[in-house]
Image 1 (cartoon, rainbow, N blue to C red):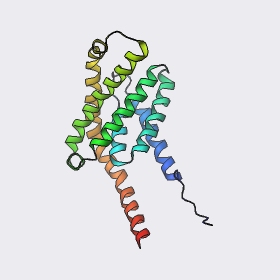
Image 2 (cartoon, rainbow, N blue to C red):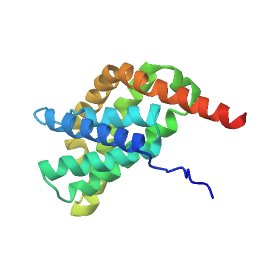
Image 3 (cartoon, one colour):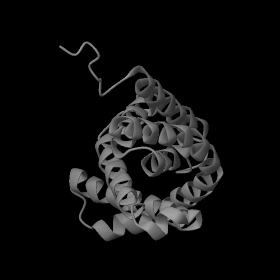
Amino acid sequence: MNSQKKSTFPIRRITHLALFSAACIVGRLSFTWLPNVQPMSAILLLLVCYGSYSDAMIVAVIGLLGTNLYLGMGSWTISQLVAFTCMVTFFYIVTRLPFVKRHIMCQAVLAFLSGMLYGFFVSLVEVYLYQLPSFWAYYLQGIVFDMLHGSGNLVFYLLLTPVYRRLFQPVAARIKGEQKNQQD
């Protein structure tokens, strides 16, 4: 029997997820005075770009529930969860393209578009949940807030990218080293 069974959630990964979740919660609560400007979205996008999709989704759920426990839980939590899932999935797909992977400004523009996409999906789910008569009327009323969200994503993405690169560079080197050792 193998006494050293590999765990899908080793202590290091749990610690990273907890720290990123805490950063999302503190960042979102710190910027509540600015409408729709929050580093949480940028943290999730950077996590999906430099980390993994599953880690970004775990942090999204924990961060969302953590902040909504403080700010208020309601039906909008469902729409926010759907929107974060769509935003992270979109960003995950487009950052796999080689051109996007190499250019930070392209990623930052996509972070802006992800903020707009977030607002679109929040509006879509809210119209369905509240049975509102017109999606476009509801969506266009909130377009300014979506632009603020997208702008915040762009700024926070550019500010936090150097930090995330340094955080994930040793992880990538360690994974490559482990893969090389397994091949030998």
